[in-house]
Length: 319
Image (cartoon, rainbow, N blue to C red; front, side):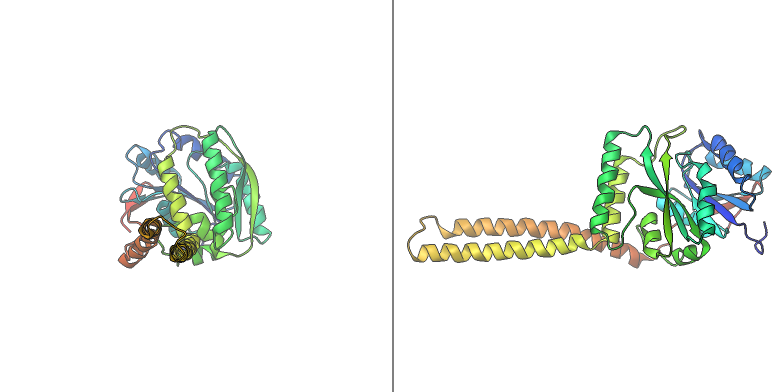
């Protein structure tokens, strides 16, 4: 497809070590895309895979001109791989979906229908999550409800990266260079007319999830510090409350001591007060440190990702 005639739709698929599912994912995706009667491209983003994923995708691009592969120089993480795909997608509308078929390709026509109705963002809402652990469902439920309470912009609950975005939205997204990133939060922050479409999230076709609980915890922390100033505000309020309580206790001790009603030494109360203040200070430093780390990463001005090559028609070119 020439640059002068971009496709109507781009499908961006970030992946890491998904050799077990790529053949089926490609076949299922092609079957649904061939039925929409629109020009399209499939942009696979290889996030530093160490298995045969890149070789499989390169072979697909040799026989299918709609397939492009953005090969990153190493593993930059799912958020950065998604960003790389969106930066390289050429469609008027772009859909992001996982490589493991947990996001159903049969929802693509519904996404396009809503887009043609005037919605610039159409996101999938997980009405049901099949074969996921109770702990995973519970932590996800609590995370989105917490973010709904404290986030500076309302993030739709029970959503993932599976969504369609209009080219106008992506032009704004391309200007956002913050690190760490939370893709679904940034798209919500951009605004424009958005709508959710419910779907049943399927179990993985094969392989294992790359999002361990440690990575999910880090993602939650990144999201909270990126989209809410509430932790900093809570520190200030707590510090003020502790300070007020310390002053009141000190005044009470002095008053009782002056009337001879208190036999306990005053230094005992003061010691307790200092201990409470020290604990608050350590907590404050820990949370403020998270914001400082993010500020430091911004000042480094490093690129969000590095592309090793772009693979089209079986040929790899250095960008």
